[in-house]
Image 1 (cartoon, helix red, strand yellow):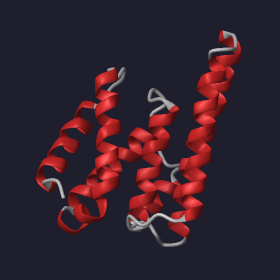
Image 2 (cartoon, rainbow, N blue to C red; image 1 turned 90 degrees about the vertical axis):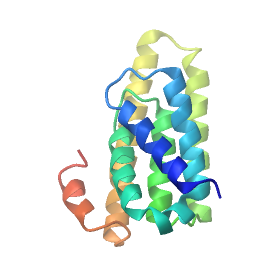
Image 3 (cartoon, helix red, strand yellow; image 1 turned 180 degrees about the vertical axis):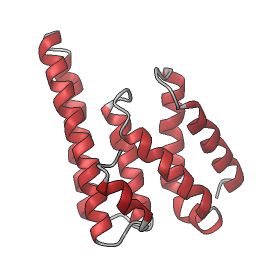
Length: 161
């Protein structure tokens, strides 16, 4: 495993830079790389850095709802949040759900190049609403199954904001 201290320090540093948009392409690239590392080493990090991961998850949730981030990044964050909630154990339903959603986002981005600005804005707003709604629904579902800490219930009841 990569050094857990390095991973957590790097992730915390990155998240502290993601407080106010616009975000640079290099920062978004670093976020994608950190998500990949976290997805790969999350189970091991959970054993040694649970408290820090709790703090990271709060920030990931905030970013997941930040509409200045692209849909693909927000979906990647949502997947990470759910993966951690499920104890870093994926299942076929989850994998299929995210495969479909990432494909839809990819198809939408290709389609955006072929439509006018007005249609593109309408599609973007609609897709952003869907990702935000999915985030709230999946959080509420996980809460109802007692797969999230109790402190998240207040957050979910308040409209996940």
